[in-house]
Length: 209
Ligand SMILES: Cc1cc2nc3c(=O)[nH]c(=O)nc-3n(C[C@H](O)[C@H](O)[C@H](O)COP(=O)(O)O)c2cc1C
Image: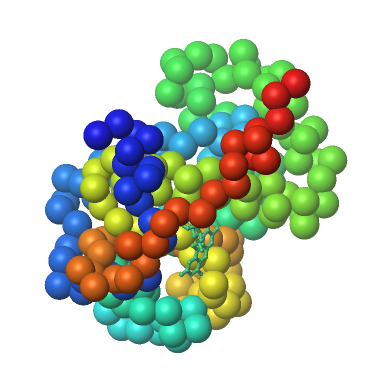
């Protein structure tokens, strides 16, 4: 199956088979793909929580308006945006670039100054929105990689952010829950798997100039 076929196969799974777990190698593959998600200037200003713990999931389900995917999927993946995008964060990032590429830190001075300039020109609210956008790219990659591995998923925004942050202790980690995905295997009787996909016609979606 081509990637396009896999994307036609995937759908936002409403009912997962709670008895089925994702194979370890497939889960690793999907998370590897998320690790490779691109981000603005490479900052990766989000973290990804992979949640299996049943007690935690029971609490999260309540905070997600009772949606059953939270407890029945194989794992819940929470994309959490960094709330403390500051000079230290950038310094650590530049250190990491220098080590990864085996270059002198000084050679990255202009790059560092550019990033700091970008950060200092934005309000905390703008910085958070910026970080959240990166988290969504991670989500897109996760959904795509899962479909490639024949793993079902459901992207979810239907949850109380403050409650998620509290349950997962995100505030003290400098994070806030942004978007989540349930991943696992569909229940055989999930009626949503039979629905015809609804998408805008290409002429309404694409503008060729
Ligand atoms: C960012 C985002 C948030 C979503 N939130 C929820 C959600 O909280 N609960 C849910 O059941 N589906 C949720 N969905 C699923 C969408 O309703 C679904 O993707 C859309 O209707 C298109 O259908 P398809 O994904 O099955 O092709 C969300 C999808 C996205 C992309």
